[in-house]
Image 1 (cartoon, rainbow, N blue to C red):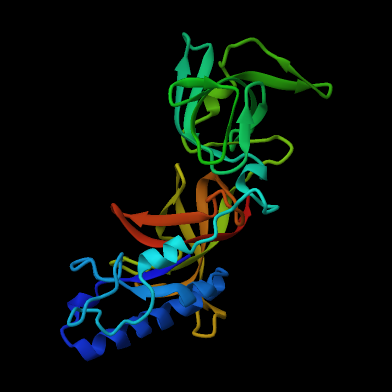
Image 2: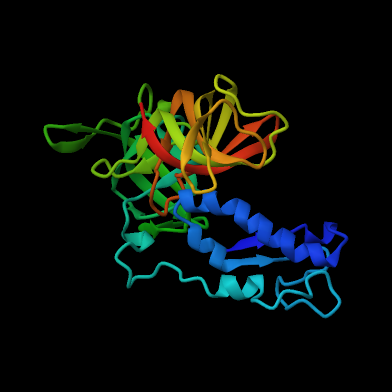
Amino acid sequence: MALAVTKLDTIADDSEREARFRHVCDRLRPFLKSIGLADALDRAVPVCAVEGGNVVRAPEPGSVLAWWKGPTFLDLVEGFELPGSSEPAALDALPLRLPLVDVQLRHGGKLLGVAGKIAQGGVRKGDVLLAAPANVRARVKEVVVDGQPWDAAGAGEHVQLVLGVAEESGGAVREEGESVEGTLLGVQPGAVLCPPQAPVIWGSRCRARVIVSDAPLPLLPGQDAAVYCQAATGEGRYGRLWKAALDGSLKPARFLTQGQQGEVEILLARPICFEPAGGSGLGRIALRDGGRTVAVGVVAEVSS
């Protein structure tokens, strides 16, 4: 992870820009530490969108960021170490996580067509998968990538799948015809396909570490909450709140305001799939209110 600090061109005094950059990094330190990303501050750089300064090329003398002598943002990105086959936790080797962005009936209502990007793991024709949080099983009848039928697809691929009903009976999976009535009709956009033996977590209560970004009013216990996680959305309300101190410790709070970091308990009307750890992205959430994102963060705990 790299941290880019922008909007420094809005500060008129050249001598104050570096101080503001350091101030922003210091303010983010407790939050990044609380989510295990404290080392991101070692890769913090200032950028200027107006001039394109320090994005691809180093700042020029006399520019807004002339004081910066460190790497550019592109230097940091090119230095990222991506998961590879030599790593034990390579994305393709992890259990399948396929968040669904589209779900529709096909072939006269006999099959279910779904689409999404494979976050981790892989899928093959003939696989039996669990659709969460509907908690139903389906057999993969077709795998389509870029309009072409494939036998299998891996992490990072945008896929379309055709699913038929599968039911486990006596330890063996057997087909129950091709009708989706009463079973796969419960699968909606935002659901996640995963292996039955390594299911994703879903629940209607979660606790998340957040930073409040653009909230015109404080976040309060009992206030309505709209949660976005990958393609899933959920309505609920805030429960308990905790504010992060400068040393990273948490203290119970009555509210959280813009610029503050802490933790929030979210009570959802319906369960959503989360994954507090891993490369699936199902641990990252956004909290929205009135069409604006008021906070972002990562899920720490999930329960029903």
